[in-house]
Image 1 (cartoon, rainbow, N blue to C red):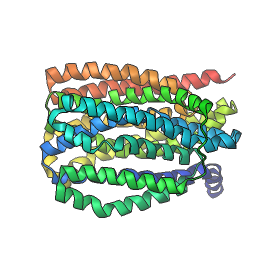
Image 2 (image 1 turned 45 degrees about the vertical axis):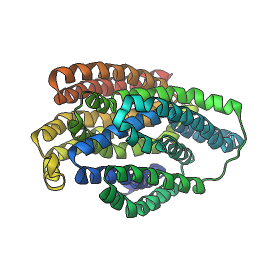
Image 3 (image 1 turned 90 degrees about the horizontal axis):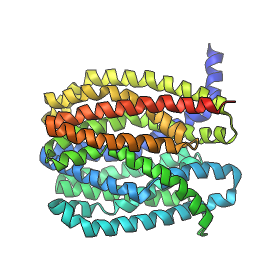
Length: 421
């Protein structure tokens, strides 16, 4: 038994080590943003907390167009060029960064022109977060480069150092300046992280490569549309609640959503760790190995996510009562319990979409699925909110996400199975 475990460890040694380092990095980076979120929930009034989440939803909507899949596509091509073309590898960061800079300049100008008219009194908060439109995609770009090169250890160390350093100013800013302080903290964190990542990776050149830009943007376009579709069937619900002036309810919805995001992080990490390996297998046409790994990771995700859902069902009310008592009410608890079914399906579909589909060159599947179900989510959510109020968002989320996740998991398996000759 001991030898069997040892052999199993040796077989998956690289994945296990990379997973641990990636976990440290993700929790270092996302932990600080989650801390800002929790501190806002604790220190702000429910109404201001709702405004905070509404503004963030707008900013992350704009960030989608500032990145538009460039960072994810970069990770794929870095992993590929690291094996096939070292010269092209050194040109990836600069050329991808040029595309991001161009996109973010366009988005920023449009926001400054249209923002005051559409956002009215909330425009000032969005204006304060405009630097994120460039900094967030650029940190994601560097993240993609590090992942593609499998530099998970270095990435983790940088993120942890930045995260711990940031703790020194986050609480003070929020406590002193409230909502404005929280926005400043977000900007400072991303600025420091971007500088640190830049110092950590300098093996690139400033050579313009038109063909490389064309190659990366072509694939990133597919991912970007998929990310847009993903936003339509996740964060768009916050904008819909804001449109119907359900500001306090935005806080309820985002509280549950953020907890789900934290719980899904381990599955995202695992997906990103195995992604370069799946890219290598696919480039070698080793489809049987991909299918075997897909079945293994799907079953693993099913078991772990089910255990997670049961634990949340038991402990969520207790944690809410002691740490965020102002949100301890039947609406929040009932909503969380209803949504636990999609926690399971989302954990599994994360492995399918990020770990396998995107890395094996099937990002179009993600795009089609997310666009279709994203548009469906908007229609259903508006219809349900009009007739049922806040709980309508919960019902529409369950229906759309569960159907999307299950059908995608099954279809991708069929797709890979058909590749086997």
